Image (tube, rainbow, N blue to C red):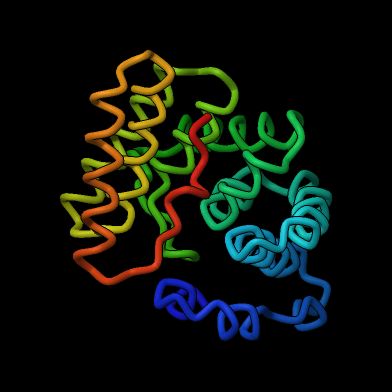
Amino acid sequence: MWIAELRGDRSMALGLLVDPARAGGAPTAITQIHGAAAGMLYRTGHHAEARRELETWFEVASNGEDESMSEETPALVECLVALGTAEMVRAAHEAFEARAARAPHTIVYATLQGRCTGYARGAIAASLGFEHDAEARFNEGLTAAERERCPLDAARCLYGLAGVAERRGNEAEAAARREAAAAICDRHGVSLVVDQLPRA
């Protein structure tokens, strides 16, 4: 599903969404399926359906452990900050903070979705108005992405940093960051829809 999306084959990506019935009633499986669907549907322009999936995800995830929520949020963060309620966004932020406080080292990658956690944490912090925290998380994610050779995650973090610069009135830096992000996508021939990434 993720590979099809990155290749720009949205029809195939949507066709590969998992039927929630396959979760077998397991809460973690239910949240993973609905969370993945929320993100995919949002990024492919199906916002009403994405909102329903997001609400179902949150209803189950908010009654579980914060580790589960923080692990799943990177797959749907664009949908969460765009369509989620303030309660949802705060809960995701608190889940990340609680997990980070327990972890013996910085968690930089969400293996379930193959996505950088720094970008997700930065986007959520920015949407809550925690500007300095957002900048730190985007930079943290960019450093990790470059170190681990994850170019699309680097592009996401660059776009997040562009939003930070824009909100501070630094249009030149914002433009440079966006140009760098777009160049990465062009270089790798990947359909990363950067204009759907949250600026706030």
